[in-house]
Image 1: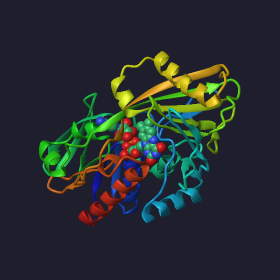
Image 2: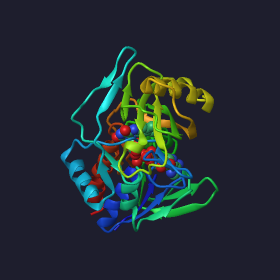
Image 3: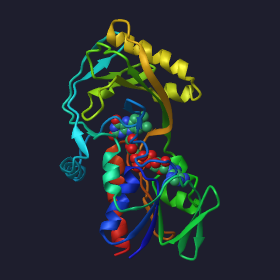
Image 4: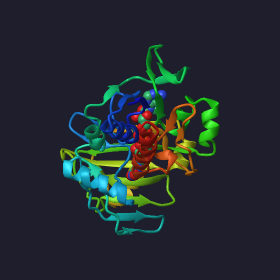
Length: 326
Ligand SMILES: Cc1cc2nc3c(=O)[nH]c(=O)nc-3n(C[C@H](O)[C@H](O)[C@H](O)COP(=O)(O)OP(=O)(O)OC[C@H]3O[C@@H](n4cnc5c(N)ncnc54)[C@H](O)[C@@H]3O)c2cc1C
């Protein structure tokens, strides 16, 4: 049985730990933040909450669909039945599609919490350096503490953060290099009264903002205040990495006023969040396992840029590791 270190407690890292643990291996997961889930993020404030990262997910492959069925049975997620609208410069109206959408209950990271049960977690532990010790690895955190030794290290952080930790020979062998990840500004607002906006979900084309959704239209959310989450386009976010909360709010209110076709009620509270590595802009093939060094890679960017890709990356690497360490 092998001893694995996994960097990152998002869906990819925790799904992988879950699978390796079921097969009898030992896994330690290191996470720089306070909470589990990574970009599956919900912020709770005093009387309201908002999903400021991933908004929902879909399942296309048979393997992920069957995993989603398990999560539904556990009560970790629910379908989010919603008719999307489309907003362009000239047009606003429903744009129905056949997609089946799901959300975590009551937070986006609910399934990550469920899968993490019984896993050895090191939270608020940012790994800064990997050190080879014979054919094993030792991990060093930002405070100079070390952990290990481990038989293999799996990195699941977004590309740039994983790349910073990898030895050059692994970067070359894994074929990392041309992938890029784009930023996204998110803003969430709670209104004191209903806004009167007809749509629950709006895809915005050709605009500064790319997405607007009534968070309180999702199942299992507190209903104290009508809450909206808006995401800015990757291009605008990249050009305004230091945007002030005032500028973000001004842009967001313009969009919501267009949707409401009327003045908006008072804002109770709001917050903004910058995702520096929100989504992979392109997906290039990545070799996930470098057997000579005992280093593996998972995470959405190794396959695509969605929640399903994060899970699929963990699933495919788990199959390789379970063979390598049978
Ligand atoms: C604004 C936004 C909207 C999105 N909307 C959707 C959507 O609607 N549908 C969809 O399918 N997907 C969406 N996504 C993408 C989705 O969130 C991701 O595909 C998925 O959550 C990635 O999971 P992951 O485990 O690969 O990475 P992450 O969730 O990023 O997990 C990686 C973890 O590694 C940790 N970490 C990084 N460096 C270190 C270090 N040195 N030491 C320790 N820990 C470290 C991070 O803190 C993080 O918790 C969205 C993403 C964003 C940001």
